[in-house]
Image 1 (cartoon, rainbow, N blue to C red):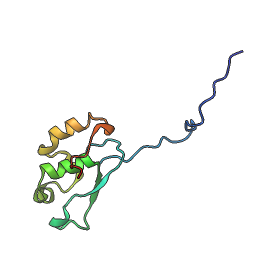
Image 2: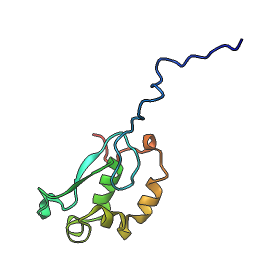
Image 3: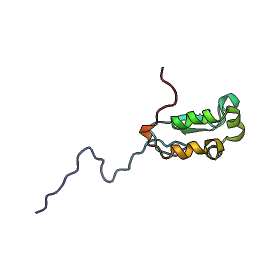
Amino acid sequence: MARQRTRPSAWPPLDSPVTVGPQCGLCEREVQATSRHHLVPREEGGKYGPTVELCQPCHSSVHRFLSNRDLAQRYSSVELLRAAEELQTYLRWIRKQRVERIANRRARR
C-alpha cells in the first residue's frame, strides 16, 4: 500500500490564483514595490496628467538619464519612454537582474 503524501499547510491550495507583486511599467518585471512617475513632469505642466508605476531603480534611472524638459517634449508615453535611446543600455541590463539584488541608487543618510 502506497503511503499518501500530504502538502504542508503553508502551501496555497492548488486551485487558488498565484499572487504576483506589482509590475514595473518600464522594465516590466514583477517587483516588490513601485512608485508613481508622471509621464509629463509636474514642473512641466503634468500635475494632473497620466502616470505610470515604476520600480525605484527604473524611476531613478529615468530622471538620471533624461531631463524633465526631454520627458515632457519627447517621452510623454510609456511606449516612447521604453524606446528612448538613452535608456536602452540600462533596460537591457535591468531586465536580467533579480529584484532582491538591486539597491536604491540614493545614498542613505
